[in-house]
Length: 304
Image (cartoon, rainbow, N blue to C red; front, side, top):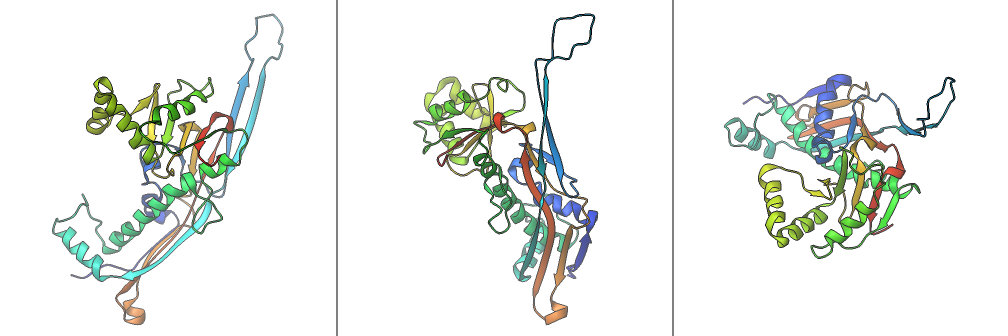
């Protein structure tokens, strides 16, 4: 079988491959935050706070109330993937997939696309981690939400502890109790929780039996969201153990430049250059996050 290995995509033509890498992590793929996909350089996140604008009617024009406009800048950072690996094990996987023995529902038509998909899955996993707990002082990461929240005095901080099935309801209750009253009941308000918090909550509900146990079964079998005091719970894979964030989806943003001229996706067969069985996969892309109002966020973390 002749394999199509060497390929080169640049600018907007690389966008679909970059999208597969960046937008397939759980938080983004499941609609947990807003996505701004075509940021060329940077984007201003504008939020408006309005108060006291309704007054008693009169014949005259009398300005009343306050409108405050705040802006934060979302400037995605540039990243790259330079990866080299041996073809042999991937050829075996590809051939098995061609014969139908694969978890892939539809294989890419070219072997080079198959290799890119393998690398994209790793990029997605790293991006998921960076979205929540990244720090731009670490190689290959941008500042995540938790990093930015900890530096913002407007964020409502709750000092956390080790969450177990015995205390999870009380600890989640602390987060919900700290929710600004104006946010409670908003349709896109989510309680983002780490894996250990989600598991502890599920076990706590199951232990109570009755209707609570039915809620757990619906979550497993019908993909119905878990809730707490009417707030949907979102399992955020990028949150560390014992972390929770309460915020509106519309207050959390992920940005990238899928149409950027700087995007690059390339596979390079090294056989013609050095006679080896190695292939190189190269990606260049941008990504980053930002939020609107810190005062409308609750952060639960053992380190605050």
